[in-house]
Structure formats: structure tokens, C-alpha cells
Length: 432
Ligand code: UGA
Image (cartoon, rainbow, N blue to C red; front, side, top):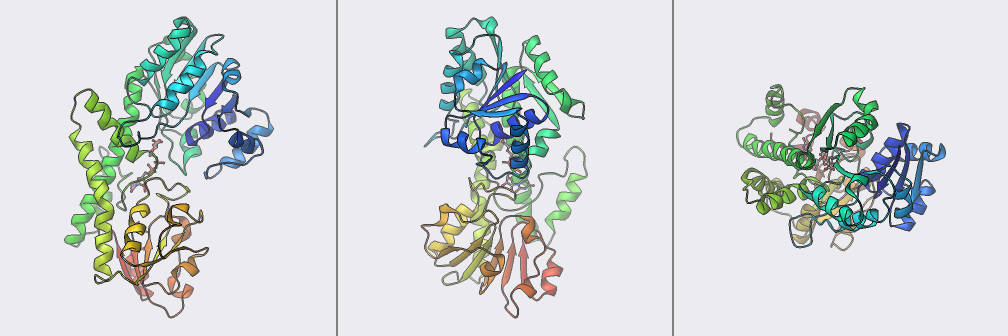
């Protein structure tokens, strides 16, 4: 079976290279020619641990190729994965599906034999129905099958998540398609991944419901953390105590800054928009969005209190600015709210991130990128650990800036308070 991945973002590139690594012949397509040329030279446009090695290996053994010729690539393939972006519509909350539909039109004129067309991008319920309509205009329905196969990859862990998934979800009512796709995923199923075949619409909704539920879990624990701070309880004890109940589970119960990234903020809004369309009130998810949007304000208020209500001229360091560790992605990172607010209030900000300078801050007053942890924290009044990079997990602050004292606000609860206080620093964390 020949595979074609359309779109070389996180979803398309990671899935494409991982399918190639499982022994399939894969072509990854993008309309961005310079991106394709870079990929052919082994240059990876995204930061994802392990990805460049895997691309180089599979490109060399010719199982993986790159092309900007969509039509030719589709003609030569049996299974087509649509992996283009579905961002939030400008000025709205629903998903912008223009890339999905444009690609579908292009595929439509290249169906020369039976093909399975699969949405791997996160798409609202009934998008598969629309794609089917587009393809039916030019093609006999026997010549193609439209399925849904949502991805559950996390940035920074994407290769592991692809190789050892909890589950593979395939949405199709067509027996032949189900059989072919189960076979495609058989190396992962035989390693223990659960396989679930549902209707196409159900598969589409499983993705949104899963992301909305995970976002709810995080928001829930963040609110419990607010309560813990008032009554001298450690939120980590609560997460552990709750998580030991198998019905709840301990993962995604880490309190911290607002959840961010390219998925949870976008997908929670999009599922509300779908529900509105079908006249259903998803009130829980609505309040999750609201609570998360308020999260940065709560943490900034804490910064204000920690600094005795004086922010002007205070030197504040951000360790990490990406929305989470192991990614260079800044989309919806809470630092994008915090740093501009503090800069506006007159703070002098230094930041260090293992993935380097961020253009998002380049126009802000008194915000400077530093290339080392040491230079970032030198002369600081307050050090904020914003992202849980491994690089920040065992800093000896005392040795790093001899004789200097500053306050540490650990928004990811990386350190134990006694360890930092023993070094002579005032230490604050979240939910304690
Ligand atoms: C998320 C889902 O976890 C993936 O399953 C899904 O495939 C992906 O979206 C997607 O839809 O493509 P991702 O956005 O890469 O993956 O990142 P997560 O690891 O889920 O983290 C999202 C946010 O939640 C981050 O801001 C993170 O810091 C935060 N988070 C996560 C917490 O604050 N606490 C936790 O316990 C876990």
C-alpha cells in the first residue's frame, strides 16, 4: 500500500515518517515548495525530538519521499491522509476548513483507482460527509471511501505517541476500508494499542471530546490549586489522591499556567461552535474555556502580591516561554499574556528558552532574550519558571549567582520548596 500524507505540519510529517518506519512507502506533500526542498535536504521545519533522525533514516532508505505535486502523489497512492491545518476562523470560534476543502477538490480530480481518503486533521463532525460530497461530484462512489482517523499525538512526544498509542480510532462504515486500515495499523495493534472502529461522525467527535475532556481535567485541577493555596494544602497530594482512583486516573492533573498550544484552545472553541450549530449547550466546556482564559490573570495577580504590589522597574526572569516543554511552539502559550502585561506595568524582563529567541516579544519594551540561564537570572528580583523544560529541573541557583538573592515563582511545581529554601531563596509554587 502506498501512502500519501497531505500537509507536512506536526500531524502529517510525524505520521508520515512513522508509517514509513513501519515499512510503508510514503510521500509527504505540501504546497510550500521551499519547505519540501528543505525536507529533501533533511532540514526539519518543526522542533520535535527524534524527528530529524527518523526522517533522515527513512528518506535514505527511500521509503519516505517529499513532493509538492499533490495530484501526481495522489494518483500514485492508495491511502490519502489529509493532514492540513484547521485553525480557528479569524474573528470566530469555529474551525476554518478552507484548506481541507481545497485539498479535497484537488484530490477529486486525481482519483484514477480505488482510494481511501482519511482525515487525520482535527475536523468538526460531518466534515467527512462534506468531503464525500465534493469527491462525488467528479467520481463514482465505488472509486473512493472517506474515513476519519483522528490523531492523538502530543507535541514533544509525538513519535512515542504514534508508536505506542493507547488507541487507534477508525471512523468508517465501509467494511473493506475498515479491513485495510486495521491492517495498516496492525504493527501497533499487535504491540498493545486498542483498536476501535466506529462511524465516521463518531470518530470525528471522539477527537474533540477527548481534547475537551483533557482540557477540563487540567482546568479542574487548576481551580482546586487556587483553593489549596488558601487553605495550606499541597495540590500535588490532591492530584495523587484523586488519580489513584482508576475511574479518574492521575495524568493531566498537573496544576500550572493556563493550558495552551495549538489544540486545546482551538478544539474547545470548535466543539462549542459545532454544538451551537446543532442547538446543544456544552456548558461544562464553555466554563472550562472561561476559567482557562482567566488563569493568567490569577497567576499575574499572584506575581503582583509576591512583589509587594510593585512591578515597575522590577527585574523579572522567565525560564521557558513555550506552551510546554520539548516544543518551540508559542501558540496560545500563557507567556504571551503574562510578558506583555508585565512589560506594560514597567517590569524589566529577561527570558531564556531552550528553543531560543521568540519574535512574539521583539516589539515589547524592556523584554530581552538571553542565551543562557545564568545571564537570564543575573540581577533578577523574581525568577518565574514558566515551562517545565528538563534544563530547569536541577539548577543550583545558589552556585549560579553567587551571593545574589531573588524570589522564585515555580509555576510548574518542578522543585520542592525545602530544597530551594535551603539555598536561601524565597520560593512560591502553584497550589501550595
Ligand atoms: C494535545 C493532546 O494531548 C493530544 O492527545 C492531541 O493529539 C493534541 O493535543 C492535538 O489535538 O493535536 P498537545 O497540545 O501537544 O497535545 O499538548 P499537551 O501535552 O496535551 O498539553 C496541552 C497543554 O496542557 C499544555 O499547555 C500543557 O502544559 C498543559 N497541561 C498538560 C497541564 O497544564 N497540566 C497537565 O497535567 C497536562
